Image (tube, rainbow, N blue to C red):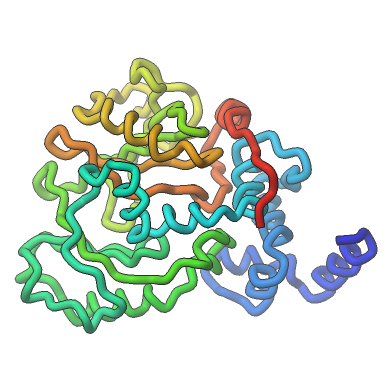
Length: 319
């Protein structure tokens, strides 16, 4: 894009009020202007999001920080394997092809719409997920008390959402949404299991974030980050809680298996977060995440932004 055209676009945005689009999204309202940015100017939209958070533009010509490089990969490295592995259903074929089908949760059904689900044939406990985004989950712990009508309505609403139009995570745009039903993973009665998020760079694990106190759509109360040896917490994360530095989470029983699987499956990618559960000593893969928090993570310390950013080796552009 030449300089004159860039200036024309900026004048248009300023005169049209598009600079307010991201602020509108933050309040939960999808405006006409936001859709223009997302549909036609994804790089510009990413810059507005970054500036809203940090008060400055992201350096996308020579990215250095973790967030800058994640944004660069989101915008300029659109490898089809990201779409395959970011989709919770097609991910399974990639895992199976690489010989790790044993870490996948048992699949109970696949549906193109909620009306296809025969709830009578499902066990008492199960999980329903839409494959093409985040926070599209229904955890059923007792089928007798499940509101089936409300569940169908939720699923249909989620299935109609183009998740790439949320904050511009472009690899979601090419996914074909389906509803999947998986086994319910029991660890502690009445609680969802800890989520172990392994940060991988070109097939090498670096650290693990532990999410505790999660609800069924990933809202989390407590985060801790451990180094690869699980003997120290690097100062990577700003916490809202006062007791986080004193809290210790035991290394999960399935930790060694998690790292083995994470490193094997992450080799094609400059960065991917491999999300696992440890269930009765068994590693279970939940998902592969390429754009955590839409690539803008204000809770990461400057040290984390520097070190994690340095670990990402950017590939040639691929659109």
